[in-house]
Image 1 (tube, rainbow, N blue to C red):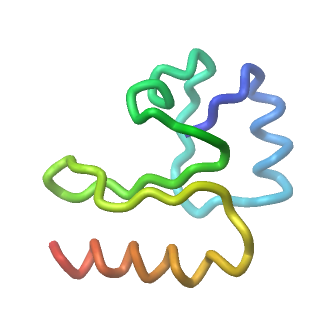
Image 2 (image 1 turned 180 degrees about the horizontal axis):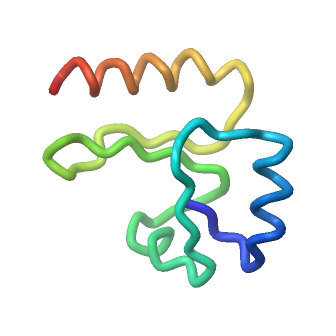
Length: 78
């Protein structure tokens, strides 16, 4: 979910940090409010039953494997 007020800001970021998944756009921040986001970037993995299965604040390259493992765990639970 991208919260930038301008899509151009989001596109500039994504040009440098390409995503292999869909990025939704919410400039009003309604989703961030709903999930009580405390900082950006934040990652939320939603389980098949709709519950938040995992939440991670921030991002560093060293976090990548940990996040991949959390995703694999959720996919394998299906």
